[in-house]
Length: 517
Image 1 (cartoon, rainbow, N blue to C red):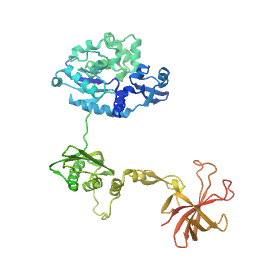
Image 2 (image 1 turned 30 degrees about the vertical axis):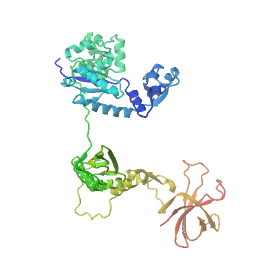
Image 3 (image 1 turned 120 degrees about the horizontal axis):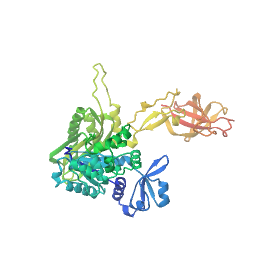
Image 4 (image 1 turned 90 degrees about the vertical axis):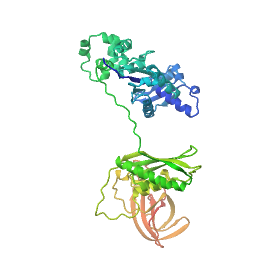
């Protein structure tokens, strides 16, 4: 067949449960002492088991079984949700780590890795020693795996999962004999194709190869998907058809680094070093047409201790002065010790940011740009203490706005409700007041708030706001808002809660809801 490639397939039979056991051990718990555990995924027919630990398997739980059926066999099962995204991220990291044994690798499904080890096995004392090293390496990390090597991807995949003790086939001419006793499921067929072959009495790959190709072509000629066509899979396994592979390439974030000839003993000198790092990083970001959203600063001391500081920006930026100034607020608590001899600034989150052409007739901008101000506030006060307001579709004042994260865009949702004049300051909660009026339905004349009596000089209103019947109970009362001014010129926003005789309560109450400037 003329094949001289060496593809390694690494299969993790219990990857999801191994990862769960590994995280449990990191938390200080003994996974072996825990009750039977299964990882499940919610479906339209109820939770379905994705993986089970050893105790759960002893109780009869299997992957693909419904949780309700498994609990009939083992009522003490503990069900946890599967973390499919976390499993995929972990598998990608492990695939990148396998590139120590070959030039490229890729993720193969939810529980496998493919590695190209062509012309490199001799560096590890041969193919068998290479596979043993891979298995031992992952076993030390808590992941059990089976590794196999073959000239084709399909051949290595079949040997890793069904090959038994023979897991190395270097010569393509020996591949048919090695795969003949394996079941047809080793061809990576879907359930329908596997069931059809089983009904035809074709249980092994050898049985399938013994059937004249013309007979199989007539039966499977309309099946274009490789997983549904055993002929396509046979051609891929034996190298007669090219099987496209997509290597996993690690993208390194933009980084700037300084190794200092003399250790820095004073934290005040770090500002200049961080400024130089920001200049270098800004040039790299400009070349890639990116702006940074999250920065990570690493400082290494002479004694080996590492210090970390991070900042997050509200919008992409590559202004070196702005980036350096953000870290000025994060220098507190840094102890140089015997000196800091290495510093690294990494843009761990970057977004596209194209250059902008300045306008020649633009007016000079004074003050601080809003994104820069927002970044400084978040850096100084903390992200959870800074928010921005956006309009919400409600006439009630306390519901007319919502809080968003500082980097959110409030312009994405706009509502034009035609509000009347609103006070500059709205109280978090309306405060009750005592009002004196000529008639219950008339204008207020005097009110008492926080122990002080105020005579009302001017009144505007009312502005009636009806309750939101789709959100509140039928007993909710309407509000009549008044803009008032007392004898000293202070202006308030008060409202009467309810009407006389509305059938929804007794005498209306009065509240103060806001203050005008």
